[in-house]
Length: 159
Image (cartoon, rainbow, N blue to C red; front, side, top):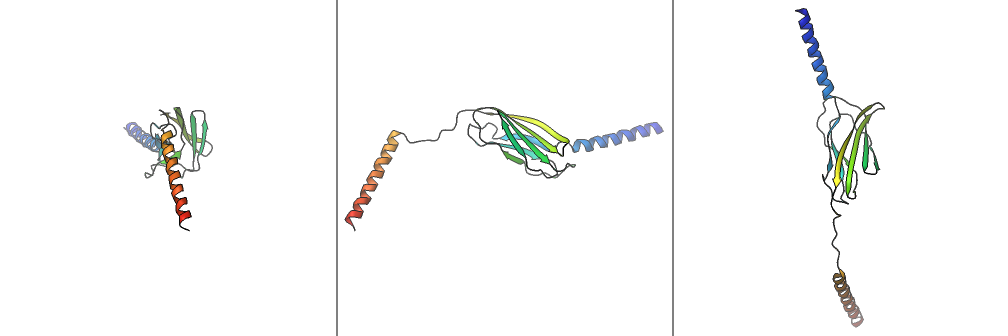
């Protein structure tokens, strides 16, 4: 009987300990790229929901080829914090192609969460900016010439 009570207590303690360890897991969740499928030249942001209660430090971002590496230093890690707004990283506009955001968190010199890779694709052609054709520029030039001539005539006839 004493053995079964001790076994139950040990199981209970291990279960509680596992719950505490699981709750103090990664200090971030839901890493994503916004917009999900950007067009070439469109600004791109990387967002993560911040689940850590320690203050995040200043991140470092490095782009090598098609891999964008973001390393976020973390001051402290604790249990279950209150929800907070997502951390936002402007990673820039890109040309068409496949890319990977590699995100990791470093706390001190030894504890690291990640890296987690978030792939995204920049598809399509750059968005065209409407420009005036030859005739549009010719009409605009003619209009400017007429306005300048009328102003000049009104200045010379009305001193």
